[in-house]
Image 1 (cartoon, rainbow, N blue to C red):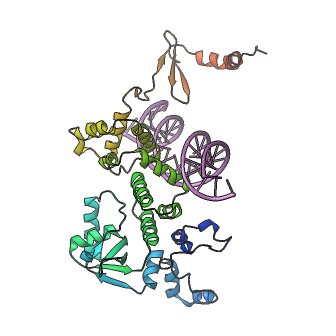
Image 2 (image 1 turned 180 degrees about the vertical axis):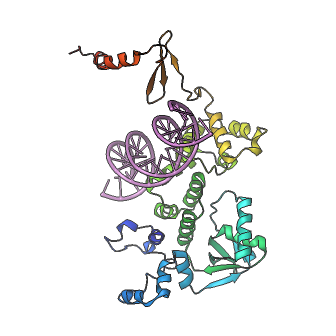
Image 3 (image 1 turned 45 degrees about the horizontal axis):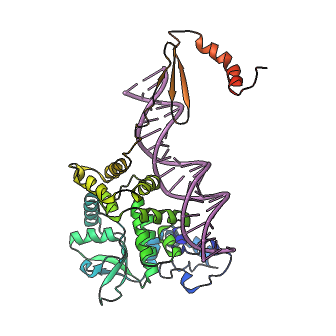
Length: 333
DNA sequence: TCGATTATTCGATTTACTCG
DNA sequence: CGAGTAAATCGAATAATCGA
């Protein structure tokens, strides 16, 4: 299934018409040679463990098994992708990854392509985190080298992010925006992020409304999704961004706040004008009556004090139909 | 305190509208 | 018509709250 997504671009239309345009063809290097199995498949399947192991292997492992070019490279020769995705790397997580590699070795190679201009250098398609971890260890990194076009690079980079690392919503938005700035087609961006055009549209709208500086100040905010980012963005659009950034960054506890909290702070700041009496349920005390009404946005709950006035609940219950009829303005039948 | 209910938020999807 | 946008709605996952 992930393999299907690697093709991505004209995915749904594949069965119908043959791929028309040149740049819509699948990413040859990444798609595991469409299983050379055709007629022999059934036979080889019975042949034994080797084939079965192949079939069970995930896409990356299969690429590895079939890829001829897993080599070891000095990490110093490898540059980042020309599009950055992740905003910040979690140092703790990175250390964990590094120690895991130190212990068990690097299980999965990263994917690089030869650098377009700098001879002898490489560019990462995916595996930024593994690269950083291996760099810490000061050893060589195992990598698969493939010739990739720019489109192929960003699509596989994005696909890998989707599959493995979980980028926060705003990080995905940033990625989308950077791709758009580089004039990648909508289809390419959609394939890279594995989103539909509606979702992509929203992401780009948010990025247009938001201040880039503000986004970076807040950080990835992993727990904040589309809805609240849209809310914040719509406020920020017609707010004093400078003042907002100032207020946010000058708070003395700014450094100690998590990215999620910084987002919340920003949202609070920008909506201070009015509202914010919080969704505290204002219990309505019906004075002198043994009934309490709890109101929320969607419903009300009547609580009868059976100790103070036993039987009142049953009494109301019996009259409910009449009350409702009265409410509807119809005479009681 | 603990288990069950309710509310909130998430991403995804559907539907409809507006432009070239 | 297709691409982009906007809004409504869905089910799932969590968080918050209630009630014994």
